Image 1 (cartoon, rainbow, N blue to C red):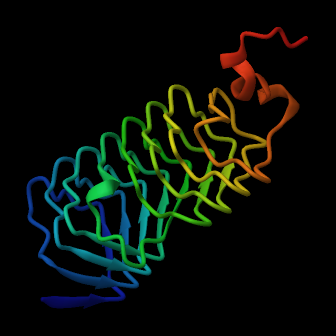
Image 2: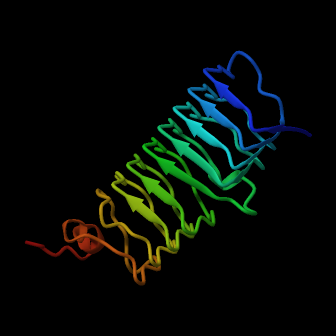
Length: 188
């Protein structure tokens, strides 16, 4: 497998020109189009994706270690098929809607100003993560570890406190309805 080190890829359309299978370290991908590209078995370490379109990308055994996604379109991704060992990403101003993190260990992950609409976090370990100003409309949390997660500035979420571990998670008073709605109580 070829090593690509400290290279900046800018304005590349990988839907029409192929990206070479390999290990990418300290690389940046700026305004690149990966839509529906097969990135299975690729390795990304300390890489940054800025303004990239990664929607519907295939991620079987893909390695993401210390990867930053900023202003990326990432709709319909299955992170549950990536290599779990060392998985570490952050998301800033991204649209990650309709994606799955089923059973993914993503402790201490940072999501900022991102759309997480219809995202599946079932059995996901988000312990210690921060979801800052994120739209979580229809996000699914079931048997998830949400201990010490900071939800204070996020909105539109519903979490069943009986089906998830939420000890020491942080919430705003405005979002308390999302924790209590299954009890059919009126909060005024």
